[in-house]
Image (tube, rainbow, N blue to C red):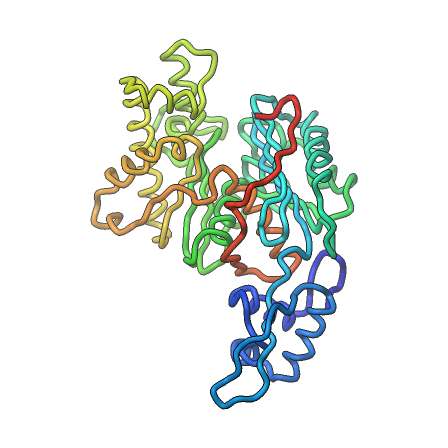
Length: 400
């Protein structure tokens, strides 16, 4: 049964629903075989799921070889609800409204802004209002909102955000004061990893490296996201690259992200070229013009990041490592540099690739959090999420 508008609690319902999502289209007898429940229980549960509009009957299947009635095929109702997801950096904000299966409806982007504790709620409220103008009519409406924060998150509270002061406020409570649907606060690298797991990879063990203002990684083992006792699992940006090196806001010296993050290469390139600022577009332009400074910096960046990738892979031995970075998406040759640098017998079989979700990996991870909560399914995978569909963009004067 649905105990509230926002979540399904009954485990057998969730098991049946997961089997339907996994199979994409299935008939009742197959569900009984897959879940181990008897046919009567499957019939009762699927009737309830149909009544709750969580599944729909799609077509008449083929009869078995022995004859008999043709089965009615069941599938998940991908448009049963909608979700809001945000990626909040220190100098940008991105948001997405999607159906519960991740199919995008609309996005909003604000770049080259300053985000801090005094304006983050107002920025989010404006973005939410923009997105909600595109919200379609669904049986359950918006069933949750996820906020991705660049920092250490424990129990949905930011406890360390090195490049902005969001660790000084209770963002979750402030948003809950304004909205009736559930609000989830998560680390952005963990969300990117969950997005990859749920929407782009058939594998059960993966790591996603996120390089933005800092460097973090999310770790999924056997389909479960690992965050550690204190929420610090995967903070490879704060592993030491150079003892007694550059100071880091975490208190250490020589942290990996002081040398290999996007922020680090942007600042170094802007200084070298006497530019007001640099980003992935600017560096890619110089690289495409064979500028020697740009070529040197991207190769150095990839080789330094490969050290962090080598270290984390030695601990977790994943099936695949995904890189989530606007610079690496613009310049995929940087992935080649990483793979070339991973030359030991321990790392030669590791697959390193760019994200398949583009710049929206964090946003898709936010949708995955909401879907897991709403459907009560932990190891949830959507084989098709509509990531290639054209989406509407909610714009304002600060949008890209």
